[in-house]
Image (tube, rainbow, N blue to C red; front, side, top):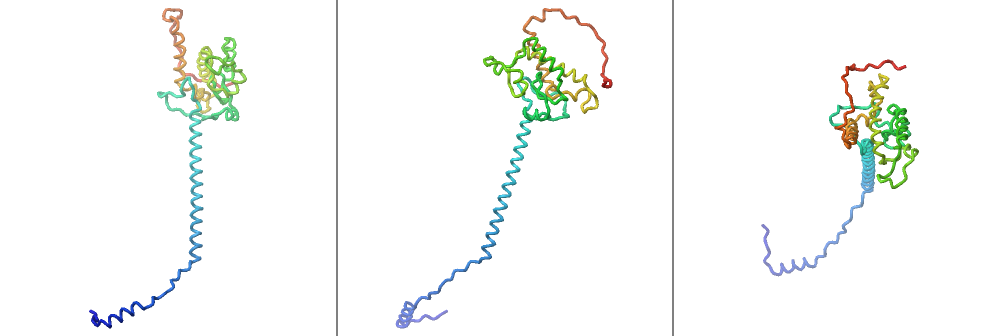
Length: 261
C-alpha cells in the first residue's frame, strides 16, 4: 500500500508538473499493405469468379437439356392426340412397338423420314404400316359416293380444301362428312384384317402385327367406330326389319400362314 503525501505545497507542485507536462506526440504509422497478400486475394477472387461462371454455364446447359428432353417427350407423347378416339385402352395388355415415333411429330420430320400421309386415318405412316392399295380404293369409293371433301369449318363457309392441300399433311382439324367418317371406320377394320393377311412372319411382331400402327391398335378406336355405326342405324326402326338370315357355322381355329411367293 503506497503512502500518500499530506503536504499541500508538495501536492501543488505535483499537480503543476502534471499540467505542464507536454503530451507525447507519437506518430502512429499505418502498416504498409502486403503486395503478395493483395495478389493472392485477387487470384482467389478470379478463381472464385471463374468457378461461378463455369458452374452457372454447366447448370444452364443441364437445365436446357432437361427441358429440351421434356419438351421433345411431351411433343412426341401428344403426337397422336385427336378428336375421335384415344390411342390406348386401360383394359388392353402392355404393348411395345418395333418403331417408336418413326415419323416424328411434324410434317417436315415425317417427310424427311420417308413416311407417307394416309388419307384414311389422317396419319403419317412409315411404309411398313401404310396400306397404299387400300388408301387408293378408299379414295375411289369416296369419289364415287360424292363424299371426298374437306372443310376448315363445320359450317363450310370457306371453300373446300383440295386433295393436293390435304395430301401435304399440313392441315389438321379439318371437317369431313358423316359418310366420310363411316367409311373411315370400315376402312380401318379392313386395314387391320389386311395387315393380318399380309404378314411375312419373322418380322418382330409376327402374325401381321408388324404392319399395325398404334392408332389402329387402340381398342378404344374400334369401340368408337362401333358406337358411330350403331347410333347411325338407330335413326331407323331396325328392330322391326327382319331381312337377315343367320346360319350355324363350324369354322377352323388358329391360322398358320404359308410362305410368301
